[in-house]
Image (cartoon, rainbow, N blue to C red; front, side, top):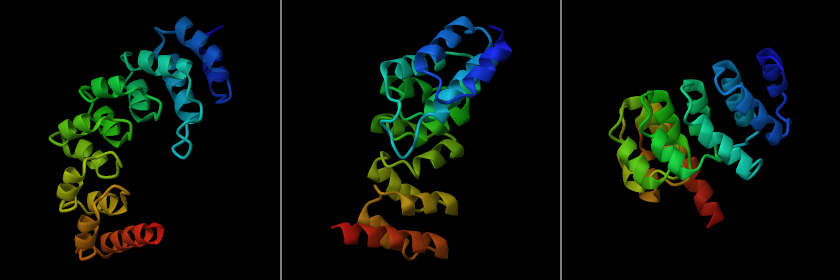
Length: 191
């Protein structure tokens, strides 16, 4: 099999994981194929059904992809819901800020790692605002961020403390205030 054939095969998100692993092992030094392996794993996972496609082979491939020099592969691993916590912890120190930012958005990232990312660049901190695993003390601080999109994600975050949301209903941006009101209303309906 040639690299271009492998890439074509990897476009099928229903390709069995065993076959994906074989392709990965055969072309481990071809960053184009490796990148396509990472893309395949991304396409077959769902933010709505986090257990879909979870398997030992998936985790093994994510661990191995996290160690490649291909930034796109590490990026795909950082956002994948099946990435093991120890890999997310390692990727939180990646030299590429986008990889760290995606670790900050991943709900599986341990709270202690999220805390450590709070002091990082703006793009990384922005990732924390919508993550339901972000510690509430950080969400309270992010609720006063100068960037209205950060405040919007905090207002929509299911983990933002109610008292913070109540304060955000008076936000200077009408959309942020409305998002906080909607979040509060949803909570009160389900209570």
